[in-house]
Amino acid sequence: MRKTGRVWKWISGTALAAVLLLVLAPQTAMASESSDAAWNALQEEFNSASTDANTPTQITLSGNVTAGEGNSALVIPTGRYVTLDLDGHTIDRGLTDQDAVVNGNVITVNGNLTLTDSSDNQNTSAYDGTGKLTGGNTTDNGGGVIVSGTFTMEGGTISGCEATNGGGVYVNSGKFNSGTFIMNGGS
Image (cartoon, rainbow, N blue to C red):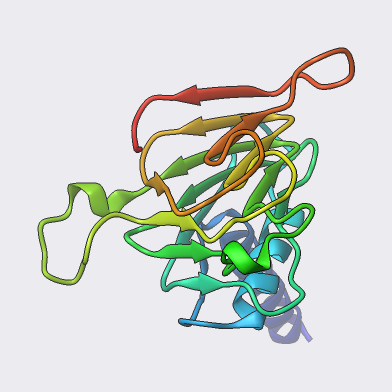
Protein backbone atom coordinates (compact mmCIF):
# COMPACT_ATOMS: atom_id res chain seq x y z
CA MET A 1 0.00 0.00 0.00
CA ARG A 2 2.85 2.40 0.82
CA LYS A 3 4.51 1.88 -2.56
CA THR A 4 1.24 2.61 -4.37
CA GLY A 5 0.88 5.88 -2.43
CA ARG A 6 4.44 6.96 -3.31
CA VAL A 7 3.95 6.05 -6.97
CA TRP A 8 0.70 8.00 -7.08
CA LYS A 9 2.39 11.07 -5.52
CA TRP A 10 5.23 10.79 -8.02
CA ILE A 11 2.81 10.54 -10.97
CA SER A 12 0.72 13.46 -9.66
CA GLY A 13 3.81 15.61 -9.08
CA THR A 14 5.24 14.79 -12.50
CA ALA A 15 1.94 15.58 -14.22
CA LEU A 16 1.66 18.90 -12.37
CA ALA A 17 5.24 19.82 -13.33
CA ALA A 18 4.51 19.01 -16.99
CA VAL A 19 1.38 21.17 -16.99
CA LEU A 20 3.27 24.09 -15.43
CA LEU A 21 6.05 23.73 -17.99
CA LEU A 22 3.54 23.89 -20.85
CA VAL A 23 1.75 26.90 -19.39
CA LEU A 24 4.89 28.90 -18.58
CA ALA A 25 7.00 27.98 -21.62
CA PRO A 26 7.25 30.41 -24.56
CA GLN A 27 4.78 29.46 -27.26
CA THR A 28 5.60 28.88 -30.89
CA ALA A 29 2.91 29.31 -33.51
CA MET A 30 3.17 26.44 -35.94
CA ALA A 31 2.46 27.73 -39.39
CA SER A 32 2.56 26.80 -43.02
CA GLU A 33 2.79 28.92 -46.16
CA SER A 34 -0.96 29.32 -46.69
CA SER A 35 -3.16 27.94 -43.99
CA ASP A 36 -6.56 28.81 -42.59
CA ALA A 37 -5.63 26.59 -39.65
CA ALA A 38 -2.43 28.57 -38.91
CA TRP A 39 -4.36 31.89 -39.01
CA ASN A 40 -7.00 30.50 -36.64
CA ALA A 41 -4.36 28.93 -34.36
CA LEU A 42 -2.56 32.27 -34.06
CA GLN A 43 -5.84 33.95 -33.15
CA GLU A 44 -6.47 31.30 -30.47
CA GLU A 45 -3.03 32.02 -28.98
CA PHE A 46 -3.92 35.73 -28.86
CA ASN A 47 -7.27 34.92 -27.22
CA SER A 48 -5.63 32.87 -24.46
CA ALA A 49 -2.65 35.21 -23.94
CA SER A 50 -1.50 36.42 -20.54
CA THR A 51 -3.51 38.97 -18.59
CA ASP A 52 -0.40 39.92 -16.60
CA ALA A 53 1.61 42.87 -17.95
CA ASN A 54 4.74 41.51 -16.22
CA THR A 55 4.61 38.17 -18.04
CA PRO A 56 3.32 38.68 -21.59
CA THR A 57 2.74 35.58 -23.71
CA GLN A 58 5.75 35.04 -25.99
CA ILE A 59 4.84 33.79 -29.47
CA THR A 60 7.48 33.04 -32.10
CA LEU A 61 6.42 32.24 -35.66
CA SER A 62 7.91 29.11 -37.17
CA GLY A 63 6.57 29.80 -40.67
CA ASN A 64 4.50 32.21 -42.72
CA VAL A 65 0.86 32.74 -41.76
CA THR A 66 -1.58 33.67 -44.53
CA ALA A 67 -5.29 34.37 -44.08
CA GLY A 68 -7.72 32.14 -45.86
CA GLU A 69 -10.69 33.45 -47.77
CA GLY A 70 -13.16 34.91 -45.31
CA ASN A 71 -10.71 35.21 -42.40
CA SER A 72 -11.08 38.47 -40.49
CA ALA A 73 -8.26 40.52 -38.98
CA LEU A 74 -6.28 39.00 -36.13
CA VAL A 75 -7.22 40.63 -32.81
CA ILE A 76 -5.26 41.13 -29.58
CA PRO A 77 -8.16 41.18 -27.08
CA THR A 78 -8.49 43.85 -24.40
CA GLY A 79 -6.50 42.98 -21.30
CA ARG A 80 -4.15 40.54 -23.10
CA TYR A 81 -0.36 40.98 -23.29
CA VAL A 82 1.50 39.48 -26.26
CA THR A 83 5.07 39.67 -27.55
CA LEU A 84 5.05 38.42 -31.15
CA ASP A 85 8.41 37.50 -32.71
CA LEU A 86 8.08 37.28 -36.50
CA ASP A 87 11.46 35.48 -36.67
CA GLY A 88 11.85 36.37 -40.36
CA HIS A 89 8.36 35.17 -41.32
CA THR A 90 5.32 36.94 -42.77
CA ILE A 91 1.76 37.43 -41.59
CA ASP A 92 -0.25 38.13 -44.77
CA ARG A 93 -3.92 39.10 -44.84
CA GLY A 94 -3.81 38.46 -48.59
CA LEU A 95 -5.99 41.36 -49.74
CA THR A 96 -5.10 43.10 -53.00
CA ASP A 97 -6.35 46.38 -54.52
CA GLN A 98 -9.33 44.52 -55.93
CA ASP A 99 -10.06 42.88 -52.55
CA ALA A 100 -10.33 45.98 -50.32
CA VAL A 101 -12.99 45.40 -47.66
CA VAL A 102 -14.31 47.06 -44.52
CA ASN A 103 -12.05 45.94 -41.62
CA GLY A 104 -9.49 44.61 -44.08
CA ASN A 105 -6.55 45.25 -41.75
CA VAL A 106 -4.04 42.59 -40.65
CA ILE A 107 -4.09 43.04 -36.84
CA THR A 108 -6.34 44.95 -34.45
CA VAL A 109 -4.71 45.74 -31.11
CA ASN A 110 -7.27 46.21 -28.34
CA GLY A 111 -4.89 44.87 -25.67
CA ASN A 112 -1.09 45.11 -25.71
CA LEU A 113 1.18 43.90 -28.52
CA THR A 114 4.96 44.13 -28.80
CA LEU A 115 6.16 43.20 -32.29
CA THR A 116 9.74 41.94 -32.65
CA ASP A 117 11.76 40.14 -35.30
CA SER A 118 14.71 38.15 -33.99
CA SER A 119 15.83 37.49 -37.58
CA ASP A 120 16.97 41.14 -37.76
CA ASN A 121 20.06 39.98 -35.88
CA GLN A 122 20.62 36.80 -37.88
CA ASN A 123 23.10 36.66 -40.73
CA THR A 124 22.22 33.31 -42.22
CA SER A 125 20.94 32.35 -45.64
CA ALA A 126 17.84 30.85 -43.98
CA TYR A 127 16.32 34.34 -43.82
CA ASP A 128 15.32 36.16 -47.00
CA GLY A 129 14.86 39.38 -45.03
CA THR A 130 13.05 40.53 -41.97
CA GLY A 131 9.63 39.42 -40.89
CA LYS A 132 6.67 41.48 -41.97
CA LEU A 133 2.96 42.19 -41.76
CA THR A 134 1.46 42.66 -45.21
CA GLY A 135 -1.64 42.29 -47.37
CA GLY A 136 -4.03 44.49 -45.41
CA ASN A 137 -6.37 46.48 -47.64
CA THR A 138 -9.35 48.27 -46.17
CA THR A 139 -11.88 50.88 -47.19
CA ASP A 140 -11.60 52.12 -43.57
CA ASN A 141 -8.63 53.14 -41.42
CA GLY A 142 -5.52 51.10 -40.67
CA GLY A 143 -4.44 48.73 -43.42
CA GLY A 144 -1.72 47.04 -41.35
CA VAL A 145 -2.49 47.58 -37.67
CA ILE A 146 -5.38 49.37 -35.96
CA VAL A 147 -4.46 50.40 -32.41
CA SER A 148 -7.00 50.97 -29.66
CA GLY A 149 -4.72 49.50 -26.95
CA THR A 150 -0.92 49.69 -26.91
CA PHE A 151 1.28 48.65 -29.84
CA THR A 152 5.06 48.70 -29.38
CA MET A 153 7.10 48.01 -32.51
CA GLU A 154 10.62 46.76 -31.79
CA GLY A 155 11.30 45.10 -35.14
CA GLY A 156 9.82 43.76 -38.34
CA THR A 157 8.24 45.59 -41.26
CA ILE A 158 4.71 46.68 -42.05
CA SER A 159 4.40 47.01 -45.83
CA GLY A 160 2.05 46.40 -48.72
CA CYS A 161 -1.00 47.57 -46.75
CA GLU A 162 -3.53 50.17 -47.90
CA ALA A 163 -6.28 52.15 -46.19
CA THR A 164 -8.20 55.41 -46.40
CA ASN A 165 -6.09 56.66 -43.43
CA GLY A 166 -3.05 54.99 -41.90
CA GLY A 167 -1.96 52.40 -44.43
CA GLY A 168 0.64 50.96 -42.03
CA VAL A 169 -0.61 51.87 -38.56
CA TYR A 170 -3.72 53.77 -37.52
CA VAL A 171 -4.08 54.88 -33.89
CA ASN A 172 -7.63 55.30 -32.61
CA SER A 173 -7.75 58.28 -30.31
CA GLY A 174 -10.47 60.49 -29.04
CA LYS A 175 -13.22 60.51 -26.48
CA PHE A 176 -13.81 56.73 -26.40
CA ASN A 177 -10.48 55.40 -27.71
CA SER A 178 -6.99 55.80 -26.30
CA GLY A 179 -4.59 53.95 -28.58
CA THR A 180 -0.83 54.23 -28.10
CA PHE A 181 1.83 53.45 -30.70
CA ILE A 182 5.50 53.30 -29.67
CA MET A 183 8.05 52.67 -32.41
CA ASN A 184 11.50 51.70 -31.17
CA GLY A 185 12.56 49.74 -34.26
CA GLY A 186 11.42 48.14 -37.47
CA SER A 187 9.95 49.92 -40.48
